[in-house]
Image (cartoon, rainbow, N blue to C red; front, side, top):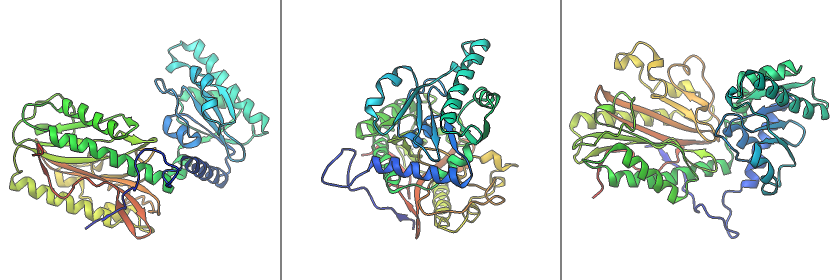
Length: 412
């Protein structure tokens, strides 16, 4: 049996009479971790785009309808500078007093402005970063870059800056989570259970996959999720191998259905969460055998996760791709896997036979990981995904929706 993590004793509201998610502490502890990583690797600063990176470094949200509309210049030894987009730039500072330095961001809207304007705008972007580094006498020091397109990186190099890769630094800083980050994930999983309840109630012959997903995501939002970016359902002949989702297929009696709620989140921390249902009838013996095998496999992977052990120790419990007649482990990438979760989907660590057996990573206390697997045959299959937190005693489940059996829907 897997071990369950403790449940939260509070909801999404604030209170002065109980310690809950302390966002000020969370921002400070994330920044401290990033600074330690920069100093460890001799990097003076990192300039970061993408909402997962920028939120981690600054605690801010921003406009994201085009890539790299805003970005953060984060220093190992100084306060960060936020380059914010247009309207946000004018009204955000009074709402985020912990940020001391604000600048206007430069962007070339995916080069839609044309090659000449792109070149001009990229130069302005690089000039702005160079200016901030110059004021701190850091123009000859290493600058890590993460989340930008090639145009941005080329402009920084042309300006004479010493550019380094930023992804390894961000992944190192974010691989373990603080108590507040873990509680954000617990909250994300808790509000996602509202989506599962709605799914269980709605799955019945005659309804469509898409109608179920829409109402399930709304239920999660009403329960307190502040992000409902994605959800999908696969049913009947689409349930194995995983492929087409949200096809609008009409459910029929006896269908196997599994849903994935991997974009439901709280304060930027997203769950990754699969469950399987059977529509209108108990699954047959063959399907029940698949599901028992699946749960046993997942339990073995989870039991192998403990501080000091490696991803190779866990990955050996996933079957080889040849089990399904495949020739390459890449044919099950993202299907037989464990991956870091939080602000990042697919952060450290990664657990699979494709990489872990040859390039193992060490488990550490405070890591949060989603473990997922599936079983079946062409045209019919089952799937399960759990979220865990690594404690000093091993991995504990942070999701609480039933996992040991296939629930028959609709709920009666």
